[in-house]
Image (cartoon, rainbow, N blue to C red; front, side):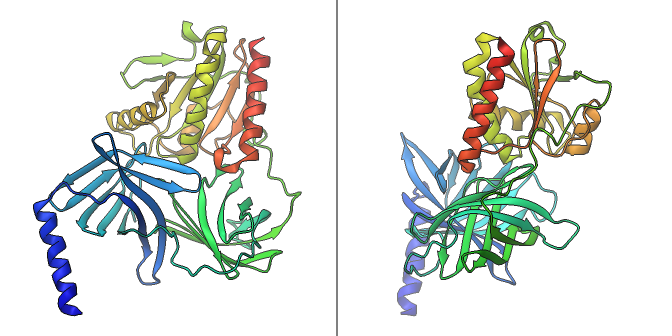
Amino acid sequence: MKIKLALLIITCLTLNSIKAQQLKMGIWQGVLTLNEEEKIELPFNFETKKQGKKNVLVIRNGEERIVVDELKLKKDSLNFKMPIFDSEFKTKNYCDSLVGVWINYARKDKNIIPFKAYFGKSQRFNRSIGKPNPMYEGKWEVTFSPGTNDSSKAIGVFKQANSIYTTGTFLTETGDYRYLEGLQHGTTLYLSCFDGSHAFLFTAKSDGTTIKNGLFYSGSHWKEPWIGKRNDDFKLKEAETITQMNAGFESVNFSFMNGKKEKISINDEKYKNKVIIVQLLGSWCPNCMDETAYLSQLYKTYNKKGLEIIGLAYERKGDFDKAASNVDRLKKRFNVDYEILITGLTGKDKAGESLPMLSKISAFPTTLFINKQGKVVQIHTGFSGPATGAAYEEFKTKTEKLINELLK
C-alpha cells in the first residue's frame, strides 16, 4: 500500500511538471484551518470550470455564487485573487488537492491562514448524514457574548425545509452575516461562509427551543460564544434611529477626490436640485458590497428621473493609489456608474470626524437620503442584504417608496 501511495504521489508531481497549466475541473471542498492546535476548520465548496478559454473558480455559499477569474497557473502553483476584496490564495497543485495559504491583506495581523482543498468532495462538512430533524428552522433571538460588556443582540434566521441541510444568516443592527451554509448533525449545527473577506464558522447545540454552547469564529483572530431562543416577535433597533443629525444641522457638506484625482463636492452643479443618496462604505466590507450591487441598479433605474448617488470610501489603508485601486475593482464588479470618492480616512471614528454634522457612525455602510433642497431626511445604518430574504425585500420596498416620494 505504501509503495502504491508513493508511486501515486510521484505520478502526480510528474504530471504537474509536464502539464503545468492543467487544473482539474469540477467540485472541490476547501478548508481553512483557523486554529491548528484545536483543529478548528472552516470548510466551503467551490467549482473549477472553463469560461470560454479561461479557467474560473466559483465559490458557493448557500444561494451565492462568487466567480473568481483572476487565476494564475505556473508550473505546480495555482494562485487566485478574490474579486473585490484585497485577499488571495497561494497554493501548490497536487493532482487531487491544493495546499497553501489564504492571505487577507485588509488585516494587519493574523491574516495568513493555512488552506487545503480536495477534488471531488461535494459535501461541505465532513459529517454523516442522518434522518431529517429540522430543529433549527425558523427565527431566533440570538445573543453574542452573553453576560459580558460586549454582549450584543441579533436575529438568527435558518432554513432547513425538512432536511439536515441548513442555510441562513444573522441580522444585526449594523448589517447581516450574509450567506451561511451547513448542516445539522444530530442536535449540533454547523454553518460556514467564505466570500474573500468573511471567513465565518458557527457551531451550536439545540433542544428545539433553545440554542446553547454556540461558538462563532471569524478567521483566526476572533472567537466568541452565542446562545439563542425561539422568538418570532423579537426585533432589533430600527436602522433609521441609530444615527441622527446633530442639533443645528439639516444638511451635509464634503469634498473629496475621485479615483482620477478630480475633486468632487456635494455642492457641485451636478448635484443641485437632485435627490441624493450618500453611501458611506469600504471596499473591504461585504455588507457594503451587497449594498453597492443594489444601489448600482437603483441608480440605473432612477438617475434620469433625478437621482444622484455619491459613495464615500473609508478604506483600511490611507494610501490613495491603493485605495483607488480597490474601489475601482468594486466599481467594475458591479458596473457602478456613480462617483465613489476616496476619503483617505479609515475607520468609523474618522468617518464621523469627516461628517461632524452626524451624531455618530456606527457601521459601514451608513446611507444618507437627501431631498432636492439639500436636507437629510433619513439616515440608515447597516444593510440587510439578499441573504436575509424578507428583510432585504422590505428594505428595497421602503427605499424605492422614499425615492419616489422625494422625486415628486
